[in-house]
Length: 620
Image (cartoon, rainbow, N blue to C red; front, side, top):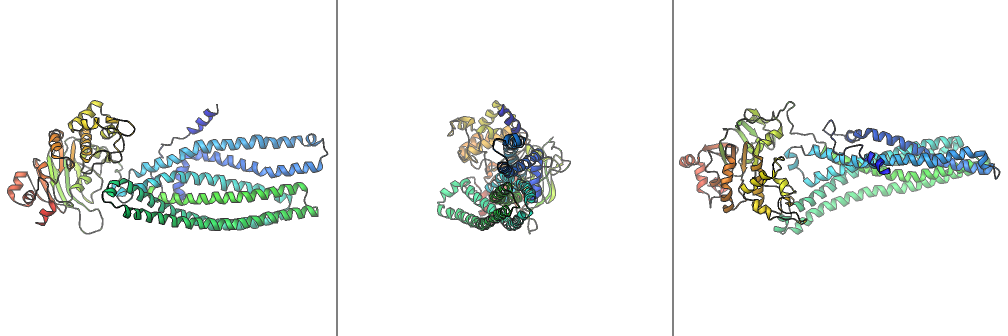
C-alpha cells in the first residue's frame, strides 16, 4: 500500500520533460525560476506543510509550559479530569498533525521533487547545450561543460529545498515564538530583538561572501575537471610523448588553484561560527536571567519560565542549523550562477523562423560568392568570394594545401557555421532557410578525424539511419570490408561482434577499422550528397584498394565532394578544383590540369608514393 503511495509521488513529474520555452534565461533568479516553476504545485504544497510543521514545533515549548502549570496548580488525582481535553489536543498535535505533515512533506520532497528536479535541470540544460554551435564546443573543455550541466541539477534542488526548510521554517517559528513570549512578558523580547539584529547582520555579511567564493570555487573545480578529463581523453598522446611530469604540473596547477579558493571559503565559515557561538551564549543567558528574575519578582509563573527557556534553547539550536543551511544555500547559489553562465548562453546557430525541411530533388550544390572568417573583424578570410557549382551527380575533387579552406567549405555546406557573405544553396534552397537537421541528413560525411560513439558497433553503424534492417547494416559493413573485423570484436563485458562496445571515440579500434566503420555508416545512410574528407587517409593501400570498388558504387548517382592529399585517390573525379587561401586558382580534369603545367601539375610532381607534400610544393 505504502509503495503505491510512493510510486504516485515518484511519477508526478517526468524527468525528461521539456519546458515550453526551451531557452534557459540569464540572471540567477530567472534561471532558477525557469526550472522551479515547472514544479510549482509541489513547492506550494511543501511551503504549506513546512509552515504547519513549524507551528507544531513552536507549540512544543508551549505544551511544556502548560504541563508545568498543570502540575503546579492541580491537586494529584485530578489532572486528567480537569485538563483532559487540553492534554488530548496536545496528543493530537504531537502524534497526528506533526508526523502526518512531515510525512507528506517527505513524500513531496524526496519523491516528487528531488530526483525529478535534479534530472530535469540536467536534461533540459543538456538539451539546450547540445544544440549550441560547433564553435561553442571548440572554445571549451568538454569535461568542463559536462561538469556544469551535472552540478546545476543538484545545486538548484538543494538551494531551493533548503531555503524552504530553513528560511521559511525559521520565519514561521520565530513569528510564533515572538507572539508567545510577548504574551508572557514583553521584556523577554528585548534580548531576542538584539540577537535577531546581530544575527541578521552576520547573515547579511557572510552569505554574499559564501556565494561569491562558491562561484569562484565552482569555476576552479570545472577547470580542474576539464584538465583531468582532457588528460584521460588524450591518454595515448600523454603516453607516447612521455609527458607525465609536464602533465602532472598542468593538472596540479588547477588543483592548487582549487584548494586556494576552498581555503577562502572555509575561512568565512570559521569567522561566522565563532561569532554565532558568542551570540547564542549571550541570548540563552540573558533570556534565562530575565525569566528567573520575573519569577523571583512574582511577575512570571513557573509555567511561563518553563515556556520561555525551551523557546530560547530551540532558537539557539535552530540558529546554527539555519546558518549552516543558509551557507549551503548560498554555496549552491554560487554553483548555480557559475553553471548558468555556461548553460544559458543563447543559441547562435538557429533555424529560420519559417524553416522547412530541405527537399533534395537533384543534388545540386552551389557556393555563390561565399566569404567566411572564423574570427570576425580580423583582416583576411579563410574563404574569400568563393563561387562553385557542383552539378547533380557530379564528382568534384578539392585540392589544396592545409589551411586553404577545403574542410571549411564542407562545414559551411553542413551549416556548422554560417557564411558571412554570399549563400550556399542545395537544389536552389539556401541552407540558412531550411532546417539544419534536414541539411545534415542530406549529406553523408566521412572525415579524416573519425570519431565513434562509446556505444556498440551496431549503434554506431545505424546512427545516421535508425530504421535500417539487420541485413542492410551487415551489407554496408561487408561493402566497407569491415564485417570480418567486427565479428572478431569483443569487450570486457563479454559482448561480441556488432554488440561489442568500441570505447570512447572508438579507441579500442585501429584508425583503419574506425575509418571503415565510418564508411559503412555513410553507406548505410545513403544520402544524396556525399562528402569524402580524406576518407581513406587511415587505410593502408591494400584495404583501400579492396573497398575502392564499394566507394565507386557509393558515389554512383550522388553529388560528391572529395578532399584528399593523396591525389591518386581523386584523380578520376569529373573535375578537380585547386584552392589557395580560400580562392579557386585552377579547375579542370586531371589530364587538363597536368597539360596546363600550372599549380596542380607542380603538386602532382611533388608527390612521394602518391602522397602530396603540399607545403613543399607551395614553397617550391
